[in-house]
Amino acid sequence: MRKALSAAVLTSALALSLPAAAQSGMSHSQHSGAGMHDRASWFEAADRNDNEQLSREEFRDFRTNTMSRDQLATYRADRRTAMYSPVDMTFTKLDLDKNGTVSATEFANAPTIAEKSTNTATRTTSDWSNPDYVTATYYMTVRPVDANVIEGKPVVNLKGERVGRIDRIVRTQDQNRYYAMIDLQGTPMYRPGSLPRDEAGVPLDDVLLFRDGSSVMLSSRGEEFLRDADARVIENPETVERLYQI
View (cartoon, one colour):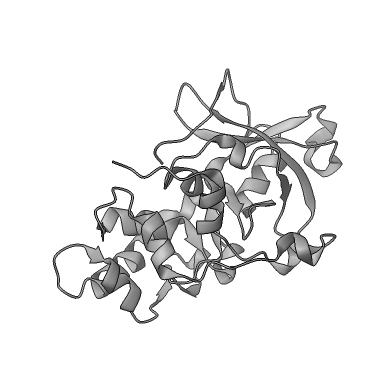
């Protein structure tokens, strides 16, 4: 049976490092606290069926939904498949007993393995074992929590500029896709062609959380959705209180 953690425990278990750019205008105390540098905690989060083993699919989900500072600028949810090949190579190296899974011991004792995307558009090398950021989708589904964990939180772009705040999480009824509806709070740069709108939807996979969860960052693709007047037309969305699967 899948373990259910409280919002507070999950936030602590997935504590992430805040980028310097996003600290602009925020006090140090707002973003201080214990960082997430414990492989055991990451393993527990990634072990979605609680059998103390990571399948290839679980490891792939973990790796393609978390990223280091080096990967932040190039991460885009629509390019994650480019990471499958190097991530699968890492999985094979970690699976020392060749049984098709990675145990907690293998995960904890593994040497640092750098991964490089095979997609030249996202070619970066990073340490998989020390991710700094996590997608909102993964954060909310590794141990299901209510959407209000991130609702109401401020949102910044990659430059640390204030975008707005998350109003709610919705799901499209036609394609079953999740979006974060962002209250733009009158931000003029996200009103293309002087479009009179107060909110816009961004794919939840392109909404990134860092350290203490007090703020949220958009990937470059997420910001593109805000700038494109035609990309976020969501017909009759269903408000979501909790996510159970990616």
